[in-house]
Length: 109
Image (cartoon, rainbow, N blue to C red):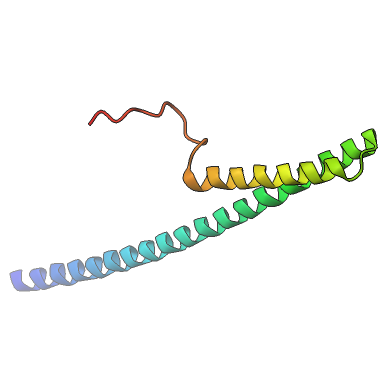
């Protein structure tokens, strides 16, 4: 009778072990998908930053050109400034600078 109880416990343990292993594999697959998704999100964000900066620079330049009658010089200048601002934002996003809270601590090593 003790052997029957022991085999039932072993089977129950093996079932639980298989279940736990399958959950671990499932969570590893989800982590890989999340990493891939965050890469896609970063790509969309970088593209959006570049496009938005150029469009905003162009609109400011066009508006100032229309107001001051200096066509197309301010448009060209502000489109170039928009490009620079977009590239600067991409640099900040990819390097992680400018979005961290707190002080940059000194290395005390």
